[in-house]
Amino acid sequence: MTDILTCMLILSGVGLILLAAIGLIRFPDVLCRSHAVTKGLTLGIFLMLVGLWVHDPGPGKGLKIVLAITFQILTIPISGHLVSRLALQKNLPRWRHRPVDDPRSRN
Image (tube, rainbow, N blue to C red):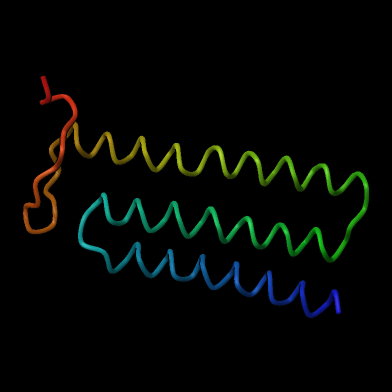
C-alpha cells in the first residue's frame, strides 16, 4: 500500500513540475511565468519529498525531509516575489498592457 501511495505522490509532484515548465514556456509575460513556476515547483517538490518520506520513514531521514520541505516552502515563493518586483521596477512589458495596482502610487 505504501508503494502505491509513494508512486502517486511522486508522480503527482512530477506532473505539477511538468505543468510549471509548460507554463514557463506558454505564458506571455514575466509575472504570469513567475506565478506558474513558483506555485508548481513549491507544491511539486513538496509532494515528491512527502512521497520520499512515505517510502523511507526513518527517524533521521524524516527530520531532513521536513527541513528540506520547510526551506523549499520559504525560498521558492520569496524568489518568485523578488523576480516579479524586479520586473515591475524595470517596467517590463505586460501582456496586453494590463494596469498594475502599484502600492507606491497610493497616498
